[in-house]
Every structure is written in structure tokens, then in C-alpha cells.
Length: 220
View 1 (cartoon, rainbow, N blue to C red):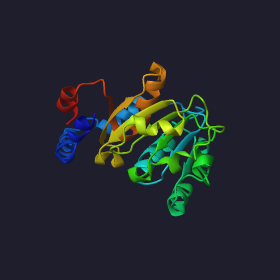
View 2: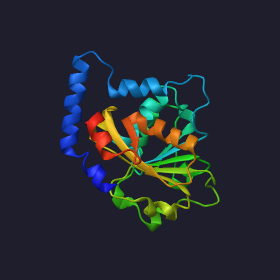
View 3: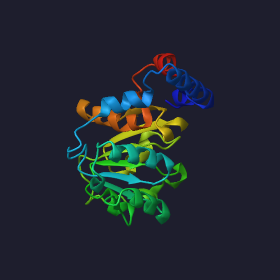
View 4: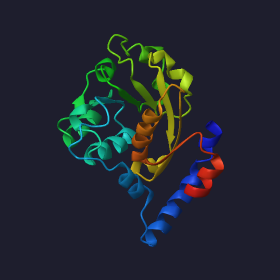
């Protein structure tokens, strides 16, 4: 998996940018437009999840939160966020007044059926996962990590059984990225469809089951 992700490094990013420019010059839909068309939902929908929690409110988290709410995929009052930086949370609160700004990780993940980790990899340790209170975690919760260099096994101390590892590349911050992802085998088909929809907010999302050759030929 790491080898596949490295293949989507700086050289691939340059190719993706060039590809995007060519596509736009031909007045054809961009990857982002394809994703939005596929993700279109009823604006009156109750949302994809009962509660979607973000741990971390940096650039990558914001790149997911803005289209998630603005395009009607998840109501802002059903999105919770926690970050040690109060200014980052205030920025999101300014854009989305009804978003939930949590006081702790424990508060953010409580009763959430989808949790997205968007913190720095070095912050993941035993003390971090101690804040995932078992009596407040939903048994059906899914955890998505977008952290670099952290395999699925490192998130098992969270107590969450359904885990997704995703690695978006740099253009993801503008919705033109490529995200390769894998998950534990206990996620059902409909849950995997939901994961793909969430990760497609970054641009294009491809599961690990797709071959590297397929990814490189079609999208880079």
C-alpha cells in the first residue's frame, strides 16, 4: 500500500495538474465535477451520517468539511470538530455557525457513527486513544484515517472495529486529488460506498483493490 501511495508522489501530482489543465482547456468536466455530479443529493436530506466527527481542523479537514456541508451531503449541525487550535475551530464556526465545536476528543467522538482523523501522525499514541471513551463510542462507528505512514493496525487501540486507511495527495486540498484507500474486511458493501463518497470530496477515490496500473493509466 505504501509503495502504491509513493507512486502518487510529487511526480504524479505534476502530471495530475497538467492533466487537469488539458481537460479544462478542452471544456470537458474536471475530476471534481465528476465527483460532485456523482455525489449530488437531496438538499433536504438528513445527511449521510447521524454524526460525523473530525479530529483535526487543518487544511485537509477543511477540504472535506466545506464541500460536505455546502453541497448538502451532511447538515452542519451533524458535523463535529475538535482541534487543539481554537482558532482553527473558530474559522470553521465562522463559515458554518451550526457546526459543533467540541471541547475534547472524547466529546467529539461521542455517539459519532463516522470519525475522521486529520491530525499530524506524530500525535497518534496511547494517550491519544485513551480519549476515545468506550462507553461513549458507538459500536457501529467507522474510523477513517488520512494520516501518512500509519497502517490500519495502529488505530485498533481506539476500540473502533471498522477502520479505513486513506492517503490523499496534495491536490486534494482543492478537490482535484487522488485518494487510494483500504479498509478492514468487516465493512459492508453499502458502508464502502459511503466511504467512497466521503473520500471523493477530495477528487477521485480508488480502493486498494484497484490495480496501480489502472490508477496510473486513467488518472495520472
